[in-house]
Length: 417
Image 1 (cartoon, rainbow, N blue to C red):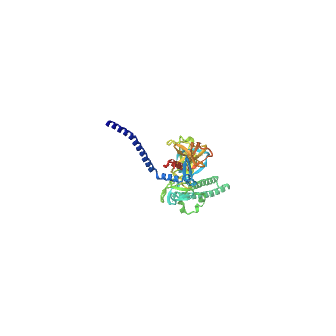
Image 2: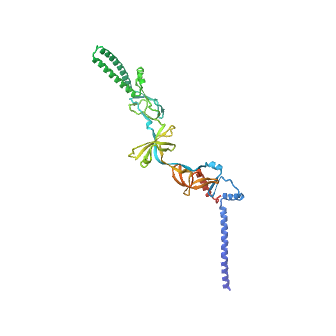
Image 3: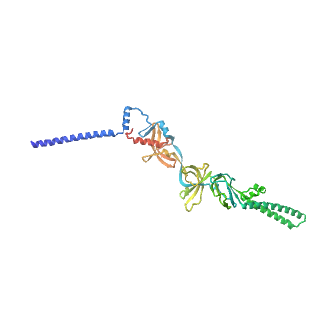
């Protein structure tokens, strides 16, 4: 009997164990369900409650996406600045970006020298001053100038005297009173006096004196003979000044540099590999950190520098506002060729998602992403080879906003709400 009782107990335990295991599994699942409900975000539970109480109604959300369709209220479209356009063809310019520098227009630059030795007694203009052609920059006193003026006046008197003697000798010779030799000597003296006068005139002309000034020189006070006014040869801005009052000057001393800053050069360094594609007359966009302008290549050098192995190309830019400062580094974006595309869209209209290119199409129900294949492009435009037909309405501005809305809907922690 004892042996039979023990065997019955073992059988009873084997039957009870599976039942206990099943009860434990059911209780574990219940606990996990409770924890899952507790970990669900409160915002999601609120949305669930809202949907249960308003099932079947349109909530009028500012933006939501169902199966890839993004719907925005008119106010949101206006707020985000979303714009649409109809796809069409256009021109795309292939370009190359080259290093450049803003420089003075050397054709509108002047080095000012006194052209005669002397002492600076007055400096009337300072660095940065704007001057007009003929405006007085400085005044110097020069003994050499006094000699030139005195020599001119003496030569003028000599001519008058020689002409008087010549007329007398001519009259006597014609009347057979004097010898022909005296007549010829007087004639030679007149010629020599006139040559000396012209030489004295040219010396003063070289210093900038006019014919009218020389005509009235004899009537000026003698103290003015040493006064020389240094004037501006061109209109512009004084960019260099090397003169102080009392300074002794040589005739070739560079005392001012004047430049017309209303126009500047953009000097471009063109490497050997780019030379075949760069041509005179090509359009370009010049950029610095603070300025941007379009221009045309006006010069392309025919010689390559031995040290840098680059050729010089040049663009002339207007600079009335003074935004282009010579010495500034820049870049020149040259349009080296241009081609036509059947469908061309702004680059900002294309977004990348999962390593694929998309544009957003305008549809009745909202905006729909459309995968496209791209072709040639530049900084502003890109060619669409497939995926967007000509005439189809697409989002030309604001595509990144729509991408953001689409990504937010895909990452919603409430399971799609």
